[in-house]
Length: 173
Image (cartoon, rainbow, N blue to C red; front, top):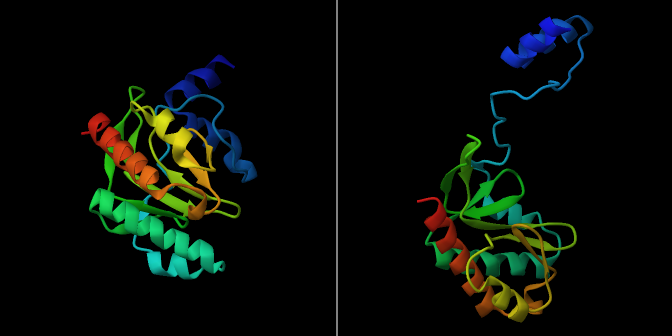
């Protein structure tokens, strides 16, 4: 058992290959790896227009076009697809104290089944005040969930996005 633990600490994938290759099973390592997983959601060359055209609800499609105009104006960046379902604007590079690093979009959105997810960074001064006045929404850690753009104040949303982008640029220069 000690040999297995030592091997696992040194190279968890080598241990898994030795243990599971014979049975052709896939498994996750049972100890922490020094190597971080690569981000699955990356900027790509998929078409934003094709993404919008695939949205069947015309009102939702128009709401997404409003967001593109708003976010393009704030970031001065063209919309790009991140993965298959996120429209992002601009990029930044992050590196955490844990050593994990990667790239993300400054801001973005995704049309989901029930709501539109708007990706913003919270934690800047005054974000609670802006959210309180925004209108009908739900808030997650980095997602603002909105059913329709008509449910919220677009000027306040623009301020939220502006302050969020400024905070991201400040934290990750």
